Length: 265
Image 1 (cartoon, rainbow, N blue to C red):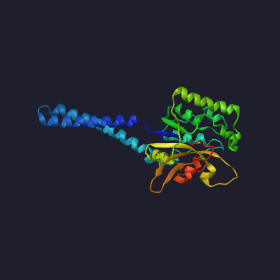
Image 2: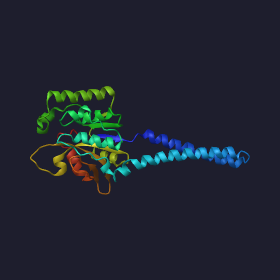
Image 3: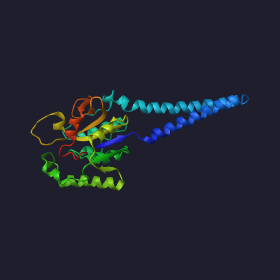
Image 4: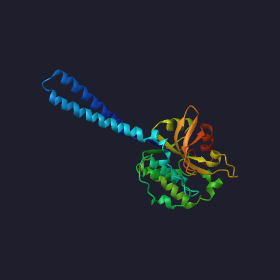
């Protein structure tokens, strides 16, 4: 799983500005009441404080209005469909970049590989664009068990393994957070249930879509947007589908993301 949170420092800075402006306003009001003779200059102080308050308030409202609250209603804006049978990860990254209003780099080397990408490659790509995110996985590195899964066999080459291993080395060198742990579906629900968080997760598409093509595993990335506690369902965007917000039960998503081959990414 790759998760994103709105930078908490941005909110804290704005809230601090609001609090300081309110203090200035209150001090101005008290001072004006205590000294009528200086009311003209102190009225100007009050106006200045009020303008600072309005500016900070408007910034805060802008953050609230441009994040997930609006995004759930305007998901067409961020949706990106995959073009081939291997680029679901790139499409999901593009959706995240749309969510962050960040320029999508179509000339990035990842777009030229013409092969399914590993989670760590997507993670390093986004971190390289200064996107505030972290990665969770059960296995840091290339799991030897993958070579026994047919879906991996076609891409389990020395060149592929070297490329993926280099990404893990880059992440360690840059001190980018990769958490090796078993993340529960409840933790994921709590994370994306926050209005400022979204996540890319790796699932078995056969399990997620109830298809039975005689394939033991088919890795696929989707973007989780939120969680509804009342119905125990996740909201997500699937780059393999036409544009549209999808929902899936917590139990089904847990089966799809826990399937052998995902590493719980």
